[in-house]
Length: 385
Image 1 (tube, rainbow, N blue to C red):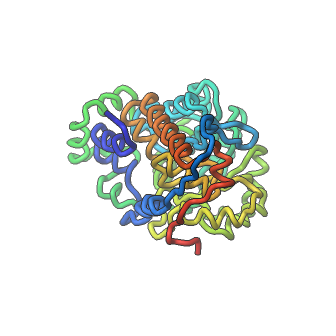
Image 2 (cartoon, one colour; image 1 turned 135 degrees about the vertical axis):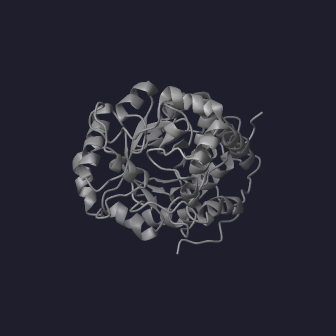
Image 3 (cartoon, rainbow, N blue to C red; image 1 turned 90 degrees about the vertical axis):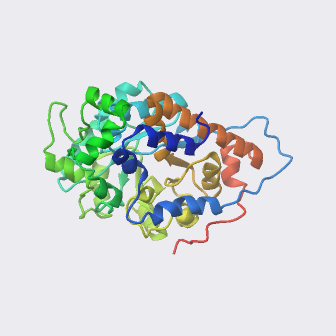
């Protein structure tokens, strides 16, 4: 029986080949940032308020004129097809079922138009990587706008890919190279192997302008390695604004001065993120810098958070420190590994139930109360500077 997020993680390890599970679960270098994301959340103690009317609990939040049923969305994650063929569409369908947005990654294995059709409704956002050939980004943004994507999320913390030692040791690459070690790994997971045989090897199809077009392998390898346009600067936001007139969010902000610059350059929202501990291993945890970012923007735009969220109490902790909502990454992928659409939906329901219970036990009847009138007993020891 899968009762906790750790249960789903353990089950995902059992059903995925080791090289796939470690791609999902691992972080950069010695994974100290990955660990700090969890440790700093755990340092925050919630101080309950008592004798409050919590018979009716409202878990919804308003974001850019839309009502989310819960204060979380599914974060952009790349190469979901290596977990399950059609994984991007499965994640999107589960998000619709729970009434929250799904953010499609540039590094998806299904096209933006196809994911919209599979979702059958709901709200989808697009996460954007800008590679050296900016025409790839331009056509993707144009297609997303025509397909009805609601917001654009520019990931800014990947000028170069983080050094992920687990992936290097496992020989994880695109296209897959079948070594004796990987062959043995796959043979021990026959269910995963059968799904891959039926669905075919995952490919990065979202950067091709036309469905019939195949990207050169060097482009696919560059996307896996996160080899991006390092000339991208604050002035480049004008270029993006010429392509996109909807909400524009900046993902990967960890410094207060960058938050101020984002506001000055017309960004509509910030996602405080260290990329799940997968980029700079020396970076601070997202939750530790969140209060400084919130103070820096001073209500000029909503602030969101990802990296390290594993429970409903974590969501409440982030809200108490000023986050409008959070984005869920690895937990959704554990659910995807365990049970496809149903597994993702089960993980999100677990988070939703956990969050509502934490609200009631803390004396908060609404997400607004959690943000505006409630404060945690402590904060992580690490400050923004």
